[in-house]
Length: 160
Image (tube, rainbow, N blue to C red; front, side, top):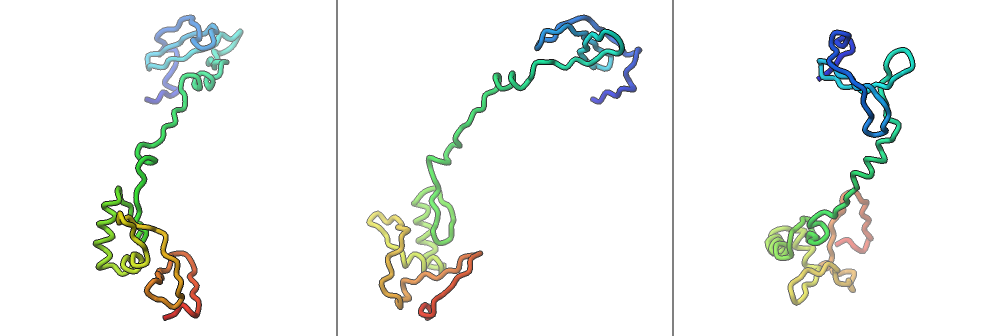
């Protein structure tokens, strides 16, 4: 609801009385009109009424009333997602990652090449450290996937 200064005048006076500022305790004049405006005025020695601006700062009171509460997000740190190293897809648990690997190892070319170079432990967990390549000319252990946004250099000996 907007109140325009032209709509207020002597005709819209409802009530006014002497009061005290609840923050700083100064003597003020409480003024209310028929439009619903409520204003605190200071008593000037002469001239027009001056709107009361409390001398006590509000920032100190706000800091005391409201403390900053910092919470750690639920589930973010306790259960980290498991990512597929070939495509980067996130999974909630290792079982769904194993199913994803078994399914795409048969049909997807990049998954097939990537997981042929990795070792599987006894528990069938994926070991993300590829084995050391002892033979440079061994093309079976090579994983050649260009990375987006990077310049990929190949040695002359790396060509088929």
